Every structure is written in structure tokens, then in C-alpha cells.
Amino acid sequence: MTSHLLLLSGFAFFVSLVFAVLAKDHARDQLRFGGLLFAGFVGAAVVIGWLMFPFPI
Amino acid sequence: MRDGVAEDFQTGALVLLCVAAWAIPGAGHLWLGRRAKGLVFLIALPLMFAIGLALSGRLFPFDFSQPLVVLQALADLGIGVPYFIANAIGAGAGNVRAVTYEYGNAYIIVAGLMNLLVVIDVYDVALGRK
Image 1 (spheres, rainbow over the protein chains, first blue to last red):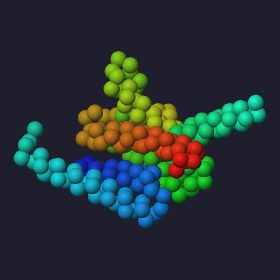
Image 2 (cartoon, rainbow over the protein chains, first blue to last red):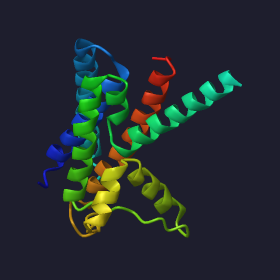
Image 3 (cartoon, rainbow over the protein chains, first blue to last red):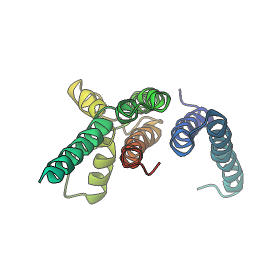
Image 4 (tube, each protein chain N blue to C red):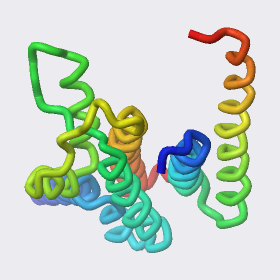
């Protein structure tokens, strides 16, 4: 279990799940908010990852 | 006087509720009858903590010569009873050479911090703010 994408997706899943359940009371709102958070986490990681690609450390 | 006693009891119950919510993730919501939310927290937070341990994450010690390590230790402690269970069985030693070490730490620390958010939510619900 050393896939960077898998681990960050798992992290994003748990954080999105807990935040969505905390912030919203209805299942539909939770699903929508949680999905948005998850997509935001993973999307931002992928975009920032590619932006950093030309600048190896 | 009577009101004072009632107020003390309410405060005591509130403290007990928050301690229960901290000790067992989701217990506060279950206590308040919010079963669906409580079950999600009861499963998700300890699972995230356990995955963090499986990823060779470390349970940081309370080393007061290193303030940042103390903050990490406090965040670890936020998960409640699972922290003590992990300590008791010798999990959480951490392996800094493992490729997943930082991810493990992130999972453990964030699980603890999110459980503290859950405790704050329970407090708000108990006071009728939510």
C-alpha cells in the first residue's frame, strides 16, 4: 500500500466523510458536500502535483 | 439553590458527554440520539487511526523539550481510547524509514483532530445550537 494517489484518496475520503457528516444534517446534502470536498482534495493534489513537476527538488 | 443544583447537574452531564465523545469517537452523537452520525464517526475515525498505524505512523511522545512534538502528541491523543489501546499493544512506534511514514502520521494526527471537532459538535448539539 504505497501508492501515493491511493493514500491521498483515502485521506481525502475520510476527511470529506467526517466533514460532510459534521456540517450537514441530510443525506443528500452530505453526499453533495462530501463529494465536492473529495473532488476538491484530489483535484487540488493532482493539479498542484503537475504544477510542481517542472521544479524537481 | 434548587436551580443551582440543576445547573450543576447539567454542567456535569455536559462534561461527561464531552468526555464520552472524546473517549469513544461517535459516542456523544449516539448518546444524543443521532445514531447515523454517531455510527459514521464510530467507524470512520478509529479506522483512519488504525490505517495510520498500519502505515508505520508514530504516536508521538509528550517531549516538552520539543514543542511541536507535544502538539503532535496532543493531536494523537485526540482520538481517545484507541490511542491508549494502541499504546498498550505497542503499536505506533513508527518507522521513519518507511515510505508511508509521513502519510501514517497524517492519518493519525488528522483522525485525532477530527475527533476533537466531533466533540465540539456534540457540545453545540447538547446546548441546542445545532
